[in-house]
Length: 333
Image 1 (cartoon, helix red, strand yellow):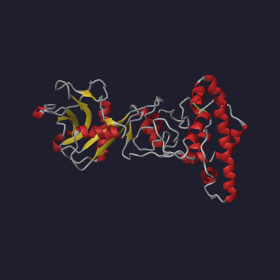
Image 2 (cartoon, one colour):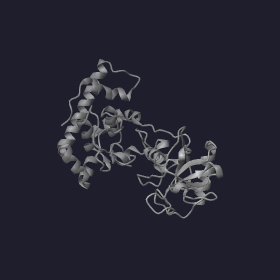
Image 3 (tube, rainbow, N blue to C red):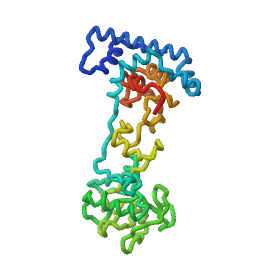
Image 4 (cartoon, rainbow, N blue to C red):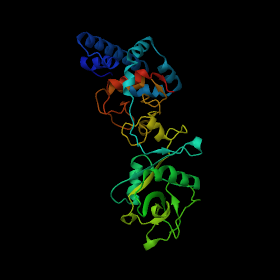
């Protein structure tokens, strides 16, 4: 079943392809005709493979996927008309201007690092929560090489105020015997860089690790609240949710992966769809009639559920999402 759209909604499809031209009555009529063609094609495809639910099941099978992938003359015509429209749906990502990558070609791990600073005292748990909210975690300096690189390339250039404590690192012994230090990522604890006389468990509650600004950024153990003298933390990003061997954070910065809600987690990973193929709404590896039917059946609505037809994640299913599906028609790259 295809949705009932008015002429104005249909006209917007053509207007997307030609932003300089505003829809006058002849264009609106042409847009309506185009929409009817789209609707007719979608209806034909849904009838051919069944309802959207059964169509998805059919498309998930090898035979169904092959059948839905066949590009008809009608689809070629629609793709030609809407190829420009799909370009306007490219999302932007939030940039952390102070983030630095330890590049693999420079002997690094490909991770990204940044210093978070604030004007009020920062506890370890609050720092960890902040790091997780932006897709990272408190940095784990698990080797002398990594520790040295972060000190030189990340912390020192940021000009952290010369106070005794901070920034926080992602290490703790909370919940274990004091001194049984561990990294929050589960990496082996095989390296440490304690300042002279540290760790000392001062006050019996120093279960968290930070760099020691007063001793050339060597390490100190401190209490959960940092005794009110810690104002910064080192954030690290290493997630690779699409398993392509590249840290997601860097791909978001370059625009290769979309992150419309600016949480530094690729939209495709949050939606459960193939990364680099956001128009594959059904997740079957092919942009086909199932995805087209999903857009048309959800037209004009706010998206719901983990997987939805809001391809460009702007909060509504509309012509841009339709253009994305038509422009990406076929097997996902």
